[in-house]
Image 1 (tube, helix red, strand yellow):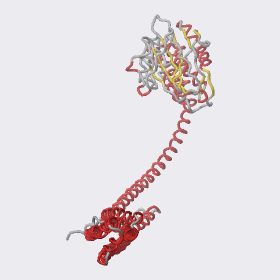
Image 2: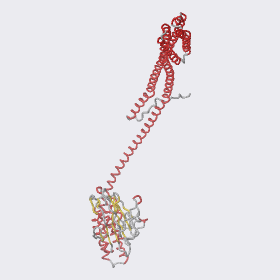
Image 3: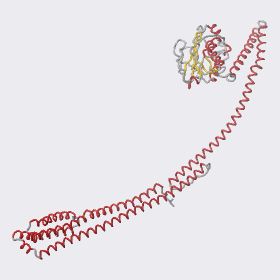
Image 4: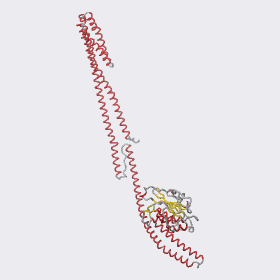
Length: 567
């Protein structure tokens, strides 16, 4: 059994409009035809029958004037009395020509007009013209004798023909008037029918809209309001024509998707709550772990240091008291023990210094890096004097940070540059800065042994060394401290191997204070030999870095300097 095909709303409205349009078109064509006929009847009534009746009456008057003029002339023989005859003849000719032009579509009446014309001509030839000639030749008596009763009867017959012509014209007028009234009534009837069709079409359209659109839309709106109120599981019924049914289906599909999304959101919320609970537990664990770390730091700085100092002290006593008294191997073993204890002390001290960065803070203040470099120059002065080194800096900015940490940062960089120098070459270290957007890029350049690019990632790892401790002393934590201090201040640090042909260029960034970010950027500071600094590598691909090992600030010695200064 075939399913019944449902008409779409567009199809229903189109069919209704076509039917109404066809009916109204037919009525319009009929009304146009009837109106044309009515206009023709009115035109005949106004422009033909009326003038024809007037001209027919005037024609009879012209003939009577001709008769009167002939009779008067026959009595008096006065030429002035013949004027009505001549004037009547002219008017007759003009009136017959006018009436003949109006009767082109009325052949019967036109034949009657021609009959009147011919009989009038015959009357003039038989009566009027002979009477005028007799009056001229023989006098009035002969003319009056000619105008006998027989000639009077002929004119009476002519008058009767004119009256019959007028009767025909009147009958034509009445017939045209009846036809005009009939076509007018038909036109009014057609207009009434058109109005009835329009009203019926409007009623049908309103009924269809109410049943096919307004009712289903109201029902659909009620269902949608229920869903909007939170009843997301309420199915939307498909009602009305196919268009509204399809709309209802789309809305129901959207409801199902929203319900599914809400279920996912609910599940995600539950998962997030579970994750939050896990994070809270982990945070509690971290708090406990931090407390344990604090305890470990305390133990490392106090409890572990004390036995370690005892071991180192007694090893040193053994070394001093029994040096040369035991065999050579015993002296070597004691030296190993002393060195191990001292290195353990340095490692513990460095590890404590590393762990305190960012944990024990005094707060950020405005720090002039030129003053910091003066302090660093003072700290490294003994080392520079020993190796014959040179330290310069220029145009360093004022930034926000912890002065102690920044001093430690620059002291480690300068100390590294002095330590990893080339043999028989006096070390030169230059610190400069330039502004790049909202950051200061600070560079530390030296002429030391340099760093191979493949080792650039290792030098900032804690306790990583590229050289044996016999070649370059230290614990390998200096650049790890540098990286942690830079990151604590919101910057980044890297080695720029492409910026120099010899030695090492270490760059790091520090944020420009917010109140200075709208100021004009300063010009870039020149390099050690006056050359312009090379732009830093992009942040996405941090280049290879630093030299090798790093010496903590505590192991460096101290000097002093000034702004844009060589010390």
